[in-house]
Image 1 (tube, one colour):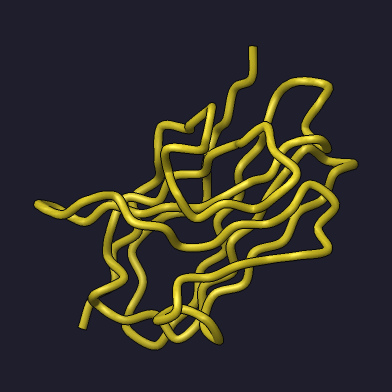
Image 2: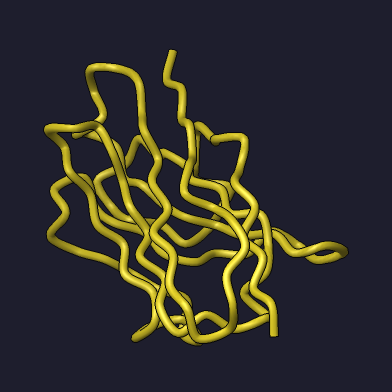
Length: 124
């Protein structure tokens, strides 16, 4: 059983930064692709970023590239999302997810495990 626990969310002013963390239980963390998604009230859950199991390849939603950075530390079973220059429209619940694949998918249907989410609120 794989469990994911997000942390690092909170309230921040526009222009500020936050770093989200996702701690993953299980011995096979290094074999999973990891992704971040977000869901704002009344909207569909959307892709934010993904990273290959090795950390060598990443993908981002087009509108977020340059402000958000995904990374992982396989020794710590943790994936991170650094968010800079935050905007009020970034307000959402952020979820991390794990996929048993060698790629780094943007399709949420390809992810096998999900965390409970962490709230990020950006004030104007």
